Amino acid sequence: MNAHQITVPAVIYAGEGSIEQLRDIIRAERAKTILVFTDKGIRSYGLSARVEAICAEEGTLKVVDDLTAEPAVSDIERVLHEVEGDHPDLVVGLGGGSVMDAAKLASILIGADYTLHDLLVDATIAKKQVRSVMIPTTCGTGSEATCNAIVAIPEESSKKGIVNSCMISDYVILDVTMIAQLPPKIIAATGVDALAHCVECYTSKKATMLSDPYAKEGARKIFHNIRRAFSTAGDLAAKQEMLLGAYYGGIAITGSGTTAVHALSYPLGGKYHIAHGVSNAILFAHVMEFNKDACADRLAELCDAVFPELAGKSVEEKADYIIAEIAAIVRDTEIPTSLEEFGIQPEDIDFLVTAGSQQTRLLVNNCKELSLDDIRYIYKKVL
Ligand SMILES: NC(=O)c1ccc[n+]([C@@H]2O[C@H](COP(=O)([O-])OP(=O)(O)OC[C@H]3O[C@@H](n4cnc5c(N)ncnc54)[C@H](O)[C@@H]3O)[C@@H](O)[C@H]2O)c1
Ligand SMILES: [Zn+2]
Image (cartoon, rainbow, N blue to C red):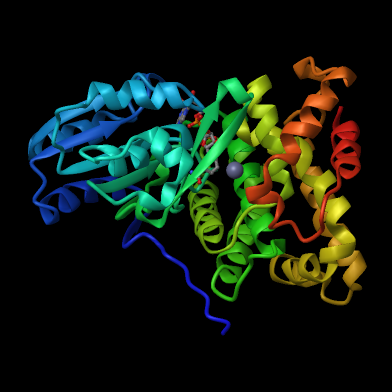
């Protein structure tokens, strides 16, 4: 049998001003008590004002905003403890991947008879407890579409993904006004993260006929819009395309899976606290170059979808073009291209190789097997 499956959020709103649809969602859900997860930064930029106003007009609102970026298990436990005893009818995640992951975990943990630690051991036991709405304020993780929540495990200096399709949100709002003021640096890092989702998922061993169209279209949108979204604050058309591209990347993750870029990136975030998008960006072109002989045909197909003007080129040339374009985007959007500025030294490589090789959940998806020497080779290239 060769049956494929993909689970996607049920209702999606997109476009400038679509945040107003939150009112319809609350009414459709007959939600009386609404729990909004966000962070202090987002709140201070005024991004949560409209969401809070709508929720407060429609019911009883509780806001949790003391979330840290790239949360650890203990951070999630702390915020869950804060809402213990609350019985929300709806959970809203308004923020980047860090906030949305926390909100998604809340949607399966509030009122449950299992704990976050239980899920770290076996995530298959999870069940949706509270329906959820995700509203991204970065254009990267695609967490609004995925079945994953990523938590840092400081004692292992790494991160772990909790995966269960019951975490997929019930509603998504992709309103460009949420990223209109996003600093260019965050647009760049989160945008390259989203591009990595699309390219990794397209070249993943787990890619299917259901994930491919999302990966391709997400890549096309991001390749063509990231520079404009980065350099022109007022280019809302490019930014809306970025939001959609990131969302498609999230669906691609659910249907397929990321590969060695994300696997080798986790220890860089977990131990050295390099932002997720930045560590992926540093590794991205190098991992693709390493993978190229095993996935040149897939990279060439992507090239056909994204840059149809190169149709006459060979498979090899098209694969090279995609990889060169990834490297150029990282440079043009001023993301660091090596680990140098993060103080990582040659003596750190042993730790990175061991920790990176333990990310087997993602490494098994990579089109080419990576030996310990291969992993060492890649980390050395980005030192
Ligand atoms: N669940 C998934 O499928 C998935 C996929 C990839 C990554 N992740 C996780 O997501 C997290 C990273 O998320 P992220 O890259 O979106 O960043 P983030 O959520 O960590 O936010 C980064 C910073 O940007 C700020 N910010 C967010 N929106 C803003 C806005 N509109 N204007 C100004 N500042 C804003 C935040 O306050 C924060 O300080 C990591 O923990 C990563 O592991 C999850
Ligand atoms: Zn990612």
